Image (cartoon, rainbow, N blue to C red; front, side, top):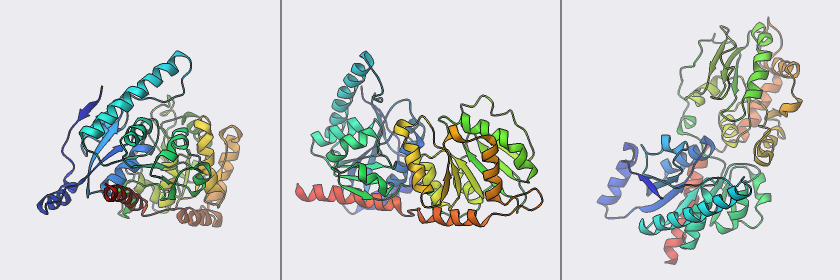
Amino acid sequence: MLETTVNDPPDSTLPAKASAVAAGTSLTRLLIAASGTGGHVFPAIAVAERLTDCQVEWLGVSNRLETQLVPERYPLHTVAAEGFQKRGLDSLRVALKLIGSIWQVRQLLHKGRFQGVFTTGGYIAAPAVLAARSLGLPVILHESNALPGKVTRFLGPWCSTVAIGFAAAAAYLPRAKTVCTGTPVRSQFQTQKDSALPIALPETAPLLVVVGGSQGAVGVNRLVRQCAPAWFEADIWIVHLTGENDPDSKSLQHPQYEVLPFYDDMAGLLRRADLVISRSGAGTLTELAMTHKPSILIPYPFAAEDHQTYNATVFSSVGAAKLFQQADLTPERLTAEVMSLLGGDSTHMHPSKGLKQMAEQAGKLAVTDSAEQLAQVIRQALKVRAERK
């Protein structure tokens, strides 16, 4: 059953819509299908904010992140959908659910007179793409990972355009029409305003930021806690974002150490950081590039098809990051890598020349107008359809 949550859009979208109505024009109706993690939802929101000339509604799943972020901005419709990593009778149940979801989305698109679909991939993309194509509607799919997901590889040829975050992804989509736009980031990364930090550190103190993430962060978190005493002696300060699934998150206490599950103002925190230790999800890497931050990347070892390693390789291959597999990384090695990059000993800390070069290379990977580029790709696809009618 299709469920709908209707809210007024944010005030920032009202002037453009009001002026369109006053001019006697109708706004193009666009359905955005983005669900699950911040890596899917945040880029879609960033694009939607640029599409003030469209009437945007959202397609998601009832128990995922979009239910917290979207209803205050756009009307939200939800369907029952899930991934295909099932076997036996479970796989049959998922397939039947997919068929039902395709029918529900098709009805939504038809009754709502939508003129196109934009999706950021993941399993919500399957019913959205298939329903839209059955009605002859254009579909723009954004793939943020260097190794496209299975849904993208399968459905890419069905889409009007597949926008990719990394140029390397094109090699895995030979039958799709691709354009490299980078990956959109939250609006906070587009400004340079000063922000309050979660830790009161001296102005010149080196700051190490650790981004564990909500998935599989426990291994990285444990490593960091083992290394931290040596870093404290070297006058390194640490902000450690552990995610919510670490039972030992409060086990380390120190004046130079702040531990949080998450932090809202990631742009401000990353701008102040001297070095970042992180997983290598596409969204996080995009934020590192936007803030020109050198990093030590430890891909999540259980990510689908090891796609985080493919992402990290894009950065490590140009010298923007150092890449280590979690299984190969000991506390001694991680301690030494951080000390080397941040400058050395407890009496004289300063960023190394290598760190500055890594920062420069990270900045070169940034696509600062990604959201606007992607918005233009969507407008062009909708325009082509309108001209053909």
